[in-house]
Image (tube, rainbow, N blue to C red; front, side, top):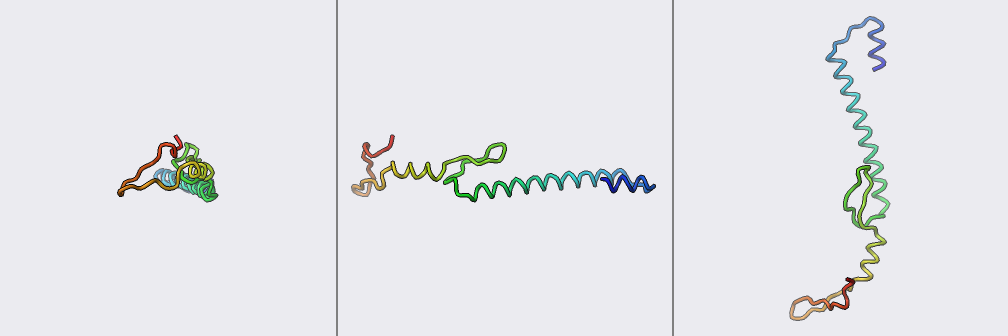
Length: 98
């Protein structure tokens, strides 16, 4: 934009359509840069293995879901194998965590 203004000050005539196209190009570049920055931050946050399962993301782009620590607690409180009788699965109510 500054170069365009300087060219006009030097007497060059630029079409309005060219100015509009240049402005749209700059806006698109800014959006692309912001999106890549957010994706990079997201990738770094996701790669720390904090979450076992990511349910979704907040409006600010932060993930939420079940952490690995929470999943370990769930695994420890849940019975490992159900009883099998005649090919059917039976859970003893006393083994269930709820």
